[in-house]
Amino acid sequence: MQYKGYTGQVEFDDEAGLFHGEVVDLRDVVTFQGTSVEELEEAFRDSVDDYLEFCEERGEEPDRPFSGRLMLRVSPQLHRQAYTRARQEGKSLNQWISERLEQAG
Image 1 (cartoon, rainbow, N blue to C red):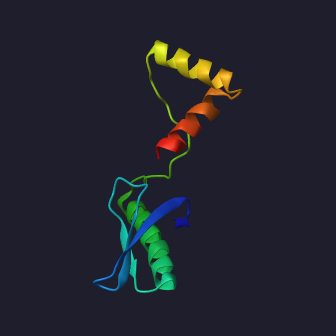
Image 2 (spheres, rainbow, N blue to C red; image 1 turned 120 degrees about the vertical axis):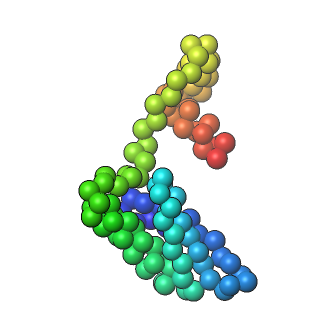
């Protein structure tokens, strides 16, 4: 689920007969629940809005969704190996690393 750039992850609890979820791109714990898809989507949006309002009331900067930019430090040898593999496959280093991370996920 996506709302204002935030991502919600949902599971179904068959014993309780409801969906429960959590906003996963935050350090804070923000949860939501519902008994139908519509109710769950509304609860997710409400939870994100409540989180943003809570941060504003406290004068705190809310966690923002990830930008897609990743700073990474590796050994010079690993950097060379990755660059060489990317070139052999006709790809940029960023494209090659992104593909490897997707495969690992």
